[in-house]
Amino acid sequence: MSYLSELTDRVQTVAQAAETIADWKQAGETVVFTNGCFDILHEGHVTYLSKAADLGSKLVIGLNTDASVKRQGKGDERPVNPETARALLLAALRFVDLVVLFDEDTPLDLIVKLQPSVLVKGADYDENESDPASRRYIVGRKEVLALGGTVRTISLVDGFSTTGIIRKLRQN
Image (tube, rainbow, N blue to C red; front, side):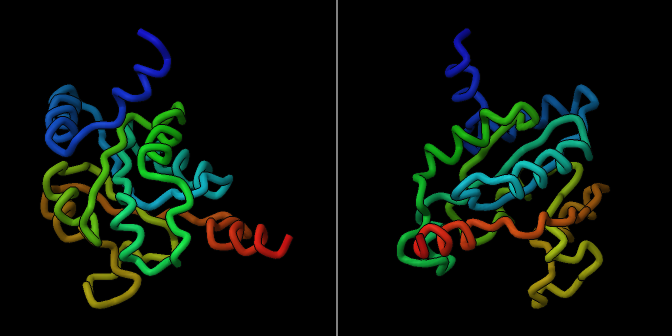
Protein backbone atom coordinates (compact mmCIF):
# COMPACT_ATOMS: atom_id res chain seq x y z
CA MET A 1 0.00 0.00 0.00
CA SER A 2 1.28 3.47 -0.82
CA TYR A 3 1.80 6.08 1.87
CA LEU A 4 -0.85 8.30 0.28
CA SER A 5 -3.39 5.46 0.26
CA GLU A 6 -2.65 4.81 3.91
CA LEU A 7 -3.33 8.47 4.72
CA THR A 8 -6.54 8.68 2.71
CA ASP A 9 -7.78 5.47 4.39
CA ARG A 10 -7.52 7.29 7.74
CA VAL A 11 -10.12 9.82 6.57
CA GLN A 12 -13.47 8.12 6.95
CA THR A 13 -17.18 8.85 6.81
CA VAL A 14 -19.13 8.84 10.05
CA ALA A 15 -20.55 5.37 9.27
CA GLN A 16 -17.11 3.95 8.44
CA ALA A 17 -15.58 5.52 11.54
CA ALA A 18 -18.33 4.17 13.82
CA GLU A 19 -17.61 0.66 12.53
CA THR A 20 -13.83 1.08 12.84
CA ILE A 21 -14.13 2.43 16.38
CA ALA A 22 -16.50 -0.36 17.44
CA ASP A 23 -13.90 -2.88 16.19
CA TRP A 24 -11.12 -1.10 18.05
CA LYS A 25 -13.09 -1.00 21.28
CA GLN A 26 -13.97 -4.69 20.87
CA ALA A 27 -10.22 -5.34 20.65
CA GLY A 28 -9.64 -3.44 23.92
CA GLU A 29 -8.38 -0.17 22.46
CA THR A 30 -8.97 3.12 24.28
CA VAL A 31 -10.39 5.58 21.76
CA VAL A 32 -9.61 9.26 22.32
CA PHE A 33 -11.67 11.90 20.50
CA THR A 34 -11.06 15.58 19.97
CA ASN A 35 -12.34 18.04 17.41
CA GLY A 36 -11.57 21.33 15.75
CA CYS A 37 -10.92 23.26 12.54
CA PHE A 38 -7.14 22.76 12.44
CA ASP A 39 -7.02 25.31 9.64
CA ILE A 40 -3.31 26.15 9.54
CA LEU A 41 -1.52 23.32 11.30
CA HIS A 42 1.03 24.69 13.79
CA GLU A 43 3.10 23.71 16.81
CA GLY A 44 0.22 24.30 19.19
CA HIS A 45 -1.95 21.83 17.26
CA VAL A 46 0.76 19.18 17.08
CA THR A 47 1.58 19.49 20.77
CA TYR A 48 -2.09 19.35 21.76
CA LEU A 49 -2.89 16.39 19.50
CA SER A 50 0.17 14.40 20.58
CA LYS A 51 -0.79 14.88 24.23
CA ALA A 52 -4.36 13.82 23.40
CA ALA A 53 -3.01 10.68 21.72
CA ASP A 54 -1.10 9.85 24.91
CA LEU A 55 -4.45 9.47 26.73
CA GLY A 56 -5.37 6.28 24.88
CA SER A 57 -4.36 3.88 22.14
CA LYS A 58 -6.29 5.38 19.18
CA LEU A 59 -6.77 9.08 18.37
CA VAL A 60 -9.81 10.19 16.38
CA ILE A 61 -10.22 13.78 15.21
CA GLY A 62 -13.59 15.28 14.36
CA LEU A 63 -12.79 17.90 11.72
CA ASN A 64 -15.14 20.79 10.97
CA THR A 65 -16.14 20.95 7.30
CA ASP A 66 -15.53 24.19 5.42
CA ALA A 67 -19.20 25.15 5.83
CA SER A 68 -19.05 24.47 9.57
CA VAL A 69 -15.92 26.64 9.93
CA LYS A 70 -17.59 29.49 8.03
CA ARG A 71 -20.61 29.38 10.37
CA GLN A 72 -18.31 29.84 13.37
CA GLY A 73 -17.69 33.44 12.33
CA LYS A 74 -13.91 33.21 12.29
CA GLY A 75 -13.75 35.59 9.32
CA ASP A 76 -14.45 35.63 5.61
CA GLU A 77 -11.03 34.20 4.78
CA ARG A 78 -11.54 31.11 6.92
CA PRO A 79 -10.90 28.36 6.44
CA VAL A 80 -7.65 29.13 4.68
CA ASN A 81 -7.17 25.48 3.73
CA PRO A 82 -10.03 23.36 2.35
CA GLU A 83 -11.36 20.44 4.40
CA THR A 84 -9.71 17.83 2.17
CA ALA A 85 -6.27 19.39 2.70
CA ARG A 86 -6.82 19.80 6.45
CA ALA A 87 -7.96 16.17 6.76
CA LEU A 88 -4.96 14.84 4.83
CA LEU A 89 -2.47 16.87 6.90
CA LEU A 90 -4.00 15.61 10.14
CA ALA A 91 -3.99 12.02 8.86
CA ALA A 92 -0.27 12.42 8.10
CA LEU A 93 0.53 12.86 11.79
CA ARG A 94 1.76 9.47 12.97
CA PHE A 95 -0.27 9.56 16.18
CA VAL A 96 -3.59 10.28 14.40
CA ASP A 97 -5.52 7.10 13.63
CA LEU A 98 -8.70 8.50 12.12
CA VAL A 99 -10.14 11.80 10.83
CA VAL A 100 -13.89 12.27 10.43
CA LEU A 101 -15.48 15.37 8.91
CA PHE A 102 -18.61 16.80 10.50
CA ASP A 103 -20.83 19.54 9.13
CA GLU A 104 -22.79 20.49 12.25
CA ASP A 105 -21.97 23.50 14.41
CA THR A 106 -20.91 21.21 17.28
CA PRO A 107 -19.54 17.66 17.31
CA LEU A 108 -22.33 16.36 19.57
CA ASP A 109 -23.99 14.08 16.98
CA LEU A 110 -20.59 12.76 15.94
CA ILE A 111 -19.59 12.02 19.54
CA VAL A 112 -22.89 10.20 20.15
CA LYS A 113 -22.36 8.06 17.03
CA LEU A 114 -18.67 7.30 17.65
CA GLN A 115 -18.86 6.76 21.43
CA PRO A 116 -15.23 7.50 22.31
CA SER A 117 -13.69 6.36 25.58
CA VAL A 118 -11.98 9.70 26.23
CA LEU A 119 -13.17 13.15 25.14
CA VAL A 120 -10.47 15.83 25.03
CA LYS A 121 -10.47 19.61 24.57
CA GLY A 122 -8.00 22.39 25.26
CA ALA A 123 -7.65 23.94 28.70
CA ASP A 124 -9.70 26.93 27.57
CA TYR A 125 -12.55 24.50 28.38
CA ASP A 126 -13.28 22.96 31.78
CA GLU A 127 -13.64 19.20 32.05
CA ASN A 128 -15.73 19.63 35.23
CA GLU A 129 -18.13 22.28 33.85
CA SER A 130 -21.59 20.72 33.79
CA ASP A 131 -23.61 23.71 32.57
CA PRO A 132 -24.09 23.40 28.78
CA ALA A 133 -24.75 27.18 28.64
CA SER A 134 -21.22 27.92 29.87
CA ARG A 135 -18.58 28.85 27.26
CA ARG A 136 -16.22 26.46 29.07
CA TYR A 137 -18.57 23.46 28.76
CA ILE A 138 -17.25 20.59 26.65
CA VAL A 139 -19.88 19.46 24.16
CA GLY A 140 -20.44 15.71 24.47
CA ARG A 141 -19.26 15.62 28.09
CA LYS A 142 -22.53 14.29 29.48
CA GLU A 143 -22.81 11.63 26.77
CA VAL A 144 -19.24 10.34 27.15
CA LEU A 145 -19.51 10.21 30.94
CA ALA A 146 -22.83 8.35 30.66
CA LEU A 147 -21.04 5.65 28.64
CA GLY A 148 -18.40 5.28 31.37
CA GLY A 149 -15.82 7.36 29.54
CA THR A 150 -13.69 10.25 30.75
CA VAL A 151 -13.35 13.91 29.82
CA ARG A 152 -9.97 15.63 29.90
CA THR A 153 -8.42 18.98 29.07
CA ILE A 154 -4.92 19.69 27.81
CA SER A 155 -2.90 22.86 28.27
CA LEU A 156 -2.50 24.97 25.16
CA VAL A 157 0.85 26.23 23.86
CA ASP A 158 1.08 29.99 24.35
CA GLY A 159 1.73 32.08 21.28
CA PHE A 160 0.25 29.71 18.71
CA SER A 161 -3.14 30.17 17.09
CA THR A 162 -4.38 30.20 13.52
CA THR A 163 -5.88 33.66 14.09
CA GLY A 164 -2.50 34.89 15.34
CA ILE A 165 -0.69 33.44 12.33
CA ILE A 166 -3.14 35.12 9.94
CA ARG A 167 -2.75 38.43 11.80
CA LYS A 168 1.05 38.17 11.57
CA LEU A 169 0.91 37.42 7.84
CA ARG A 170 -1.27 40.47 7.24
CA GLN A 171 1.20 42.70 9.07
CA ASN A 172 4.07 41.54 6.89
